[in-house]
Length: 201
Image (cartoon, rainbow, N blue to C red; front, top):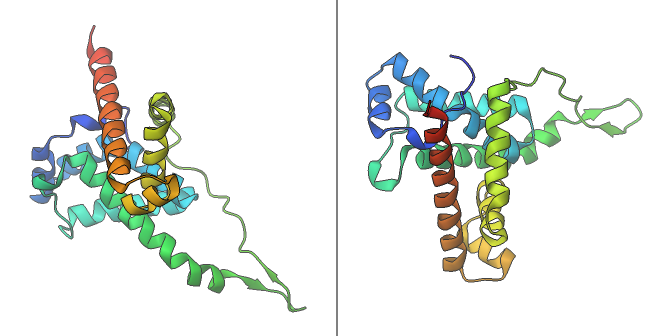
């Protein structure tokens, strides 16, 4: 499969996930093309490491392909489900970092410790189309009202719950939830509008 294209993720039909669940490789490839760039951006923002973000993405698509997890249409759109799944797996990795970081520390002969060597692997998902989509999504997000932008970033990039966001922003949890929903709706509508415009001759 090739890196995610610049196609709008809001166009993912539930039927596509059903085809993936039936074992259609072409459907999995199409799902990957439609969603991987956005999901990789979220994973990278949360994990801060390109290689680990790419590994996480492989885990997400493998779980979907292996039927470890299934989309429930009653719990939101396909892309919302994919974002939630990616975010959940990223949070799992973040929680495990404490012991892994301690184990990865290098001990020198004089008793000092040094951090593990830097990651010099070539960055994946750096195709022009991927960069263009990431830049475009970032621009749309930056254009949202500050309160909505802040709530979305805390939820999807820092992994905070509505309650945690409410505490951080000193506001009711319901207000944080509403701001996230409004912001995501605007983001989705902007992406859909731009996709329609790009399809016109």
